[in-house]
Image (cartoon, rainbow, N blue to C red; front, side, top):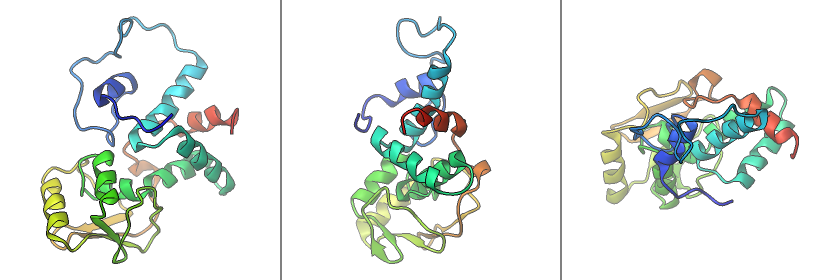
Length: 202
């Protein structure tokens, strides 16, 4: 399955609030579809699948990419679920979003893909680039790039900047000071269920 490009509110109605996917909130609080209001008791598999889908849609990654991140997290010592969240949070598109340069992760991905963002002074147009502590992330020194980010900074997606990042709005540059801690992850997700979901197939 490739990256989702359909209606975003339909996803948030089914999975709950996904801060990285959209800033809009659905008028109806129940899931979409004919049987949205009278759902049966969900199976163990359905619960795990839902948690996995939250990660996929919030961070805008494909099934193949998520499976790759799970395998990578397994090779690192420590809690696999926590390492998985750190890998996803340290992606360049998500870091740009968390710094407030874009209102959503898809918008941040577009900024990166179109070459508006630099890492340590060099343009990087790969959204999945893993940011490392000590790296400086800034807006490219071009009129068009600065105007785009200036407009986005008026309405940041999330109000609070995580403690592993710093960002100077006047200079339009930020720095990664460390790896994100679990309590700063904005998405409400049970990462252990995601690891369990993949334990059968990865």
